[in-house]
Amino acid sequence: MKTPNTIYHNATVTRARRNQLNNHKSVVIWFTGLSGSGKSTLAHSVEEALHNLDCRTFVLDGDNVRHGLSSNLSFSDDDRKENIRRIGEAAMLMMESGVIAMTAFISPFKKDRYLVRQLLPQGDFIEIYCKASLEVCESRDVKGLYKRARAGEIKNYTGIDSPYEAPDNPELVIDTEGELLEESVAKVIGFLKSKGIIY
Image 1: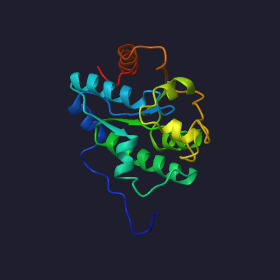
Image 2 (image 1 turned 180 degrees about the horizontal axis):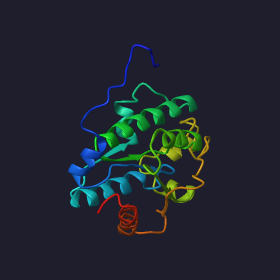
Image 3 (image 1 turned 180 degrees about the vertical axis):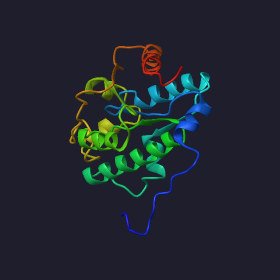
Image 4 (image 1 turned 45 degrees about the vertical axis):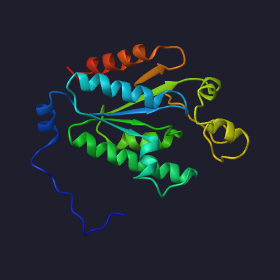
């Protein structure tokens, strides 16, 4: 909660100066899709490619954040909303620090993703929809979570008894069901180059 006793401090080392030092622009790349759609795999593979291009990067991964920043949250709709709000704020701070911040979260609700988009300047939120059918995602279910959800052991599981709202107009759609990982990574890198984010 904001109070009148807190005043935002504007640093002299700005995002623009950090971007100049890094020799690339900082942005937030938001990977969204069903569990098992390949979000984390793609995000970390893109990070590897960017690292090899001497870019400053960091991936905020769903499971990792749930161990720390959001360890006190459940999977209710309200707590999912708060989880995404926290991620959005953390990603924005990373972007301000000059980093290409990537997030790999189901983030199932359009409204929550839109609110994160509204946090950032125009063009700094890149939504990438990792598109794969529920059937394919279930077939990749290495943790057995879909199976447990269908058995009623896990409640509010996205795609089973809680909805996933696909983006209407993402910056990029990646067919993680039909493409090789290398093809998907190349598409993301190509997009970043086309937008002048990396040179």
